[in-house]
Image 1 (cartoon, rainbow, N blue to C red):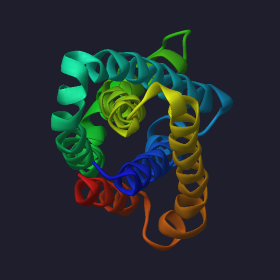
Image 2: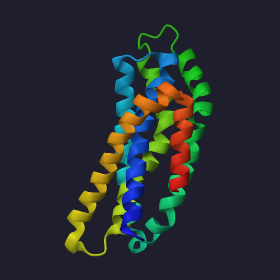
Image 3: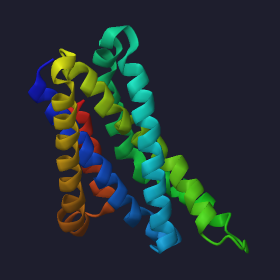
Image 4: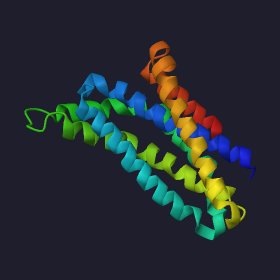
Length: 193
């Protein structure tokens, strides 16, 4: 597999991670607000899911000398994109259920919003976390340049994440809306897949 294709892949998936994270705050706000508790839940769920994805992706990347990585990388991105595009539809019932669970609880919005975010956002973020280890395995042709190749892939992913912070906040959310931002980044992931 060509190096440029793998670099473009991690760039796009890195961009999608932060776009999902920032757009999630807007999708959640009508139900739970946008307090520090909500942001803590969003960031915590993103980091937890990515950590699991990195671990699982690393384990899968080593199966059969990287054969499995080559077979699942792009289908995984496509399915993740489809899920991301469906988030506005499946999110509403999850948020309404979690919101109704708040009641008179002393825990306020923290636990129900955490529950809702874990259910809604864990799966696609675990999948996106798997991408960098899978791409790293496919990009490595020898251990002699492993540090440079893996460092470069993660750098491209991070640059994508930087772009993923600005595009939703400055362009897609203000001009298109939150739902449409999920549709857009879902479509971008499906095209990449």
